[in-house]
Image 1 (cartoon, rainbow, N blue to C red):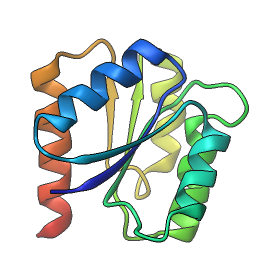
Image 2: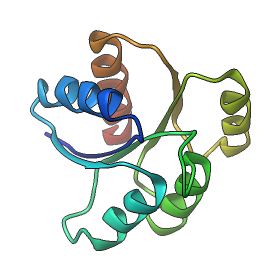
Image 3: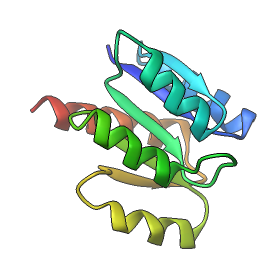
Length: 124
């Protein structure tokens, strides 16, 4: 299946999302903030099929991470997650870079379905 980088500062949300996506046999790499996510992107020779990142995080937020990732890996789909309406509005400025913004809270089935649809669209 796909290699997915999950960048989320909330340990419980990151574990939930990782567990959900592993159910679909995806290979998951986890990072706990944007800086760690950026380092994972740059330091991984195998590459990723998808970046799934929270927007609101310390060190480097998901908006800055998405811009950096898109500049280096323009074909990699990027999906952002947020529980804050104002952060969702900030993500609107990334139209053309970010494929989707998923609103928290979401169910296990929702995250699996939305990530699956994004990956399928990227292969089409």
